Length: 397
Ligand SMILES: Cc1cc2nc3c(=O)[nH]c(=O)nc-3n(C[C@H](O)[C@H](O)[C@H](O)COP(=O)(O)OP(=O)(O)OC[C@H]3O[C@@H](n4cnc5c(N)ncnc54)[C@H](O)[C@@H]3O)c2cc1C
Image (cartoon, rainbow, N blue to C red; front, side, top):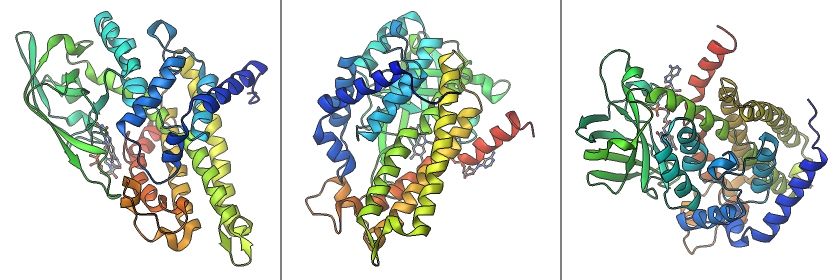
């Protein structure tokens, strides 16, 4: 495999850099890099800028309004955006639901929802997990009972990321209790403004509340909001999860995190030398960098297969495990690098209070990011469960 970019790919990379130089608002990069949390409006602003350029949905075919980028172009765009400190593209509509609707949705659903995702008319969230149905997702109980031309939904979803911003939720619901649990699940699109939907925040270990519980009490959902066939939702859910896991590898985030760690190690003093010149610290950084380079290559392999029309298989589990370990190691080493300034827990600074952070700016987020990113090895299917998938389907154990 030739890993050098072709002339065309280099030209595309230059085009992306020029676009980011011109269009990425400095206010957003400063917020992302510094101590302030990005708001819904910040994300929407960045989505709109990308959409105007036609690059918001790099992974979608042009027929659906996407950029139709190949795997390498998508990789370049992701790398350049994260390196430039751009906000992440919120994945729920673009990376998760979009591909499912394109493959399994009706023409009406495609025509209605896909443009709304691109234009920012809808903010989607993901209603898969429930209390008691996380790793064992097929045991989910949130129920949808057919009543004429509606389903009536009752039950609870949990850990719903950014559900507080969303007006739409794609849900796995139980439509049958017959047979295997996987055979009674359907994929339903629910308007969160329907009477009976309630969103309750969950405060996390870093002090933020990016996840929620979503409760449904006699929520009436039109039958045309069913994706594909009734009781076939498990197939669509699995297809979506493979896309979610590739996205979770986060090569760009890891590269940006490593760049930031290097900047900190160059700035921090370690006795009479800079921290980056401490051989023990430098060796730990090098090990992360080698792992990251290996993962970036695997990521390219998986996205090329996806570009050739295959849904990524167990390789996306590999990427999920490795990608999340690398990012957590970067967080841990960043805390080590900022030393005592990692001690104060500055959630107020991160959430936007007026108080200046204690110590250098780059230290303020170290502990919050370390704590928040414990989630990486849990969501999108826990790393333990991913290892079982790898053992079964790749190692045939
Ligand atoms: C910050 C955050 C955001 C999330 N966002 C969303 C979202 O937007 N939408 C959504 O639907 N869900 C979301 N989730 C839920 C996430 O997908 C689940 O937390 C995850 O699937 C694990 O399920 P659980 O929490 O019920 O843990 P459990 O499944 O109860 O697992 C508990 C522990 O047991 C281990 N374990 C479980 N089963 C096995 C097994 N068979 N073999 C080995 N070990 C096992 C797990 O690895 C874990 O360590 C989010 C979670 C977090 C933490």
